[in-house]
Image (cartoon, rainbow, N blue to C red; front, side, top):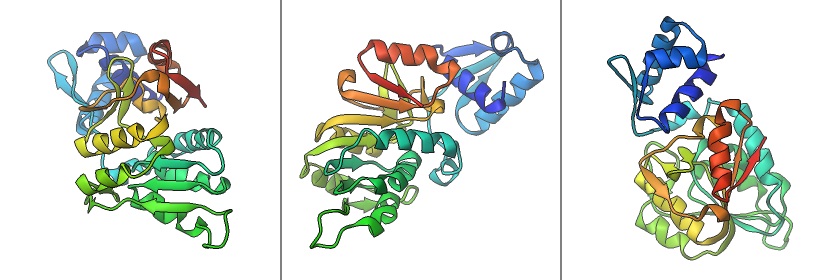
Length: 259
């Protein structure tokens, strides 16, 4: 089992169990004690777990810095983005939040004509700026960057002004990329502002499309996005370790699309 796959397995187990023993991890992943020790040291250094006597404990999930996340699982995020684009139609209005997966999504949206993109992501807006249509045509794309305060860590806008602007629109689809998603907690973010914006976008649209690579399945963070599962679609990667978590999400009525 590759190290990245072991990381996903450890975090998936901790999504439903507060504490895991080293012995259980050795047996579950069929690796040596030293391999488990090194994995737990690496996960703890990233703030994803907390080592305790005899094993490891769950911590509230937080994401690495935005710049670091841009280089992680790019191929998987690209596959998700391509699948998400197939679920959109020309002429729709879509909300897009600020994340590394939605930044890749922006590169794929060029294929859809007459799309109206409303986003708080400066990265998404800049990537789509060259696709906007001249005022006398109806074939290109319209891009609306929401106003508000700027985030020093993520290239985006946020705050009360951004929330108020979101409420001016009625979109067909909201596309978000959260920290984690599981059957018990739903869609969650590590930042209250991000969760508030995602919730506002979801409330102002007809459907919610959740873009989450395989490492986010089964995870949870501090702040939830409230939306009935039956009104959500999850697009994620096929990964054997995530099968139980995806089955639990499907059982709640959420439409799960794997790529």
